[in-house]
Image (cartoon, rainbow, N blue to C red):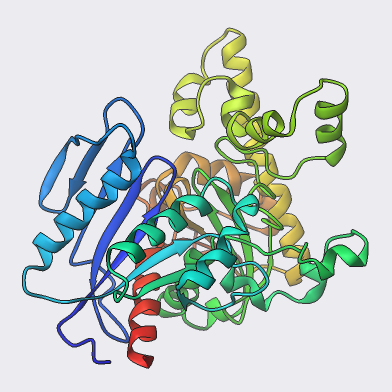
Length: 400
């Protein structure tokens, strides 16, 4: 099917927000969307919506199904923007593809059922993406819905990186390390060689630091190790998630403190990380503003930031060991791209690798922020998950 003159809609659905963007259709669409926007605060007292043409403003949503109502209003805006142009496909960021889905796939009822079985592996993200797919399948069955998986990029992991030290029967049931943030890392696998040439084919660590956070070790632009594993709860300390945690602590919470399974899940996913340790916020920017306090809150804020940095530095050291050295360290996503202070604190602890920052370049968020004398190049590369999803969806439609 030709995609000439058509467009692809990309949806990134979360629990309380939906990002949307329209891209030109084609095998290699422009990297900037023709139009984009976001609905925030779904289910809250005052949801809002903004797009490229309209500033953020309150959005009236029904109380019975506010999420579905938000989708309906997004689609109305999309149709108005399309005018006479055709929508060829909708690409959805779906966090988990399990052990079955390695590539983008057009979703039908059977595929949707398969993906719903994976909801327990990514409860913060999976159900909302699948809900959006189901709504659109019911409203327009002929419009291709394409699932693009955050786990797919990590299918190049060697088996030793996928395995969990559980009985072998668990491996046969699909319990393994999958890795996440794959659309972000896939974009870097395209963008880094363009900016850094052959260096990007060497020993690379990418730091995707946002409300969720992970590291990925790349060699030859392929994932060879990553910090997130069986679930998006693993690895680095995050905004509200624990990251790696001694399983004995979970047993203690359930056996000694008598927390239910649901209560433990709430603690691990929503009440831990920077928010839990600091007691103030999940946002590093807010914590930097509070760390100068001389009271107990200030102590907790400083402890939270120190632990956050320590966990990142510790995991970078582990990935350097896997790679056998380091040529390029890249920061991406919200915190990675925009927090010069966080980058400085992390890189200060990496002096043992020879990392030297150019302070002015770091403060200016330059593409390359390491000093000329630094044997390890340190860079910033804005991620573009939406473009990756749009490209996959357009290619799938072209293949028919």
